[in-house]
Image 1 (cartoon, rainbow, N blue to C red):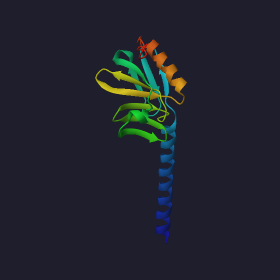
Image 2: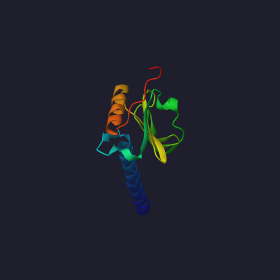
Image 3: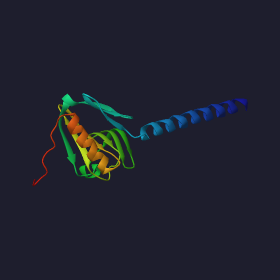
Image 4: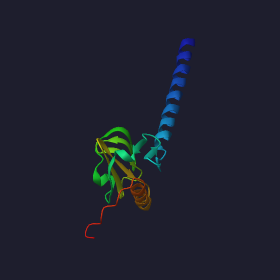
Length: 146
């Protein structure tokens, strides 16, 4: 009887440790990624973060489509929770807070997969796009028909 009680306590402690660990993991991955522009790079902080050096950027394009319309493909290493897509997907490296609405920023890199960024609000995504163009010394492509 005493031995069964010990196994019960050990099992209970093990279950609590697992539940706490899973809870911490969920909280860590659900925190929004922040995009910071430095002198020579774009730094995306948080789970599955990245540093993209301006020298590695081939082009920066603002796509009017949402990430769902673009098609993220299969998740390889990352999270796909609600409208948030973060990490490596078939389409590239995703930092998308709102996958259901556009626009979406696409950063093509020399010799590496593209990076997609979409913030909660479309105006914030457009503002980040203009900031990225300025910081990376790129010129925005002309509007079609302009």
